[in-house]
Amino acid sequence: MTQSHDELIVSSETPVYAISIAAQLAGLHPQTLRQYDRVGLVVARRVGGRNRLYSAHDIQRLRYVAQLSQEGLSTEGIRRVLDLEQEIENLRGRLDEFHRERSSRALVVWRPQRKKRG
Image 1 (cartoon, rainbow, N blue to C red):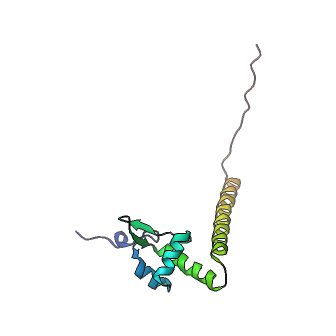
Image 2: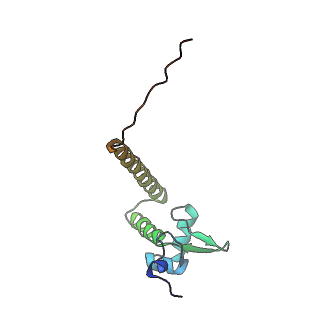
Image 3: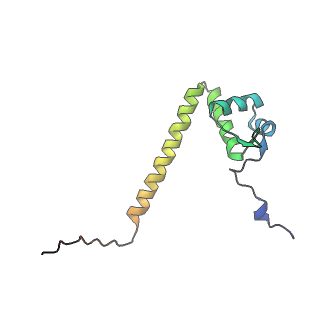
């Protein structure tokens, strides 16, 4: 039985990289990843209660956090930037939803209930 190519593709959200590999891919020291995990900037998934695993998305985020750090932001500043960017993403999603609803060609008929005269 052979697997199709699509079955072999791993989602960018799937944690597959051990801390040593993730650190190497992000260009950071493993201790830096542990620190980011401790303060909640990039939270690794735990396997077996001990081992940290990182996804491709986590690696991208690690690189971004490192860039912000190199630009002089403190840990709290980085956290604030990440929170604000997440808030912007949420608002963009809501705005897109509003535009989809507004441009919908569906006709909605509303008929108020009339009170029965007794």
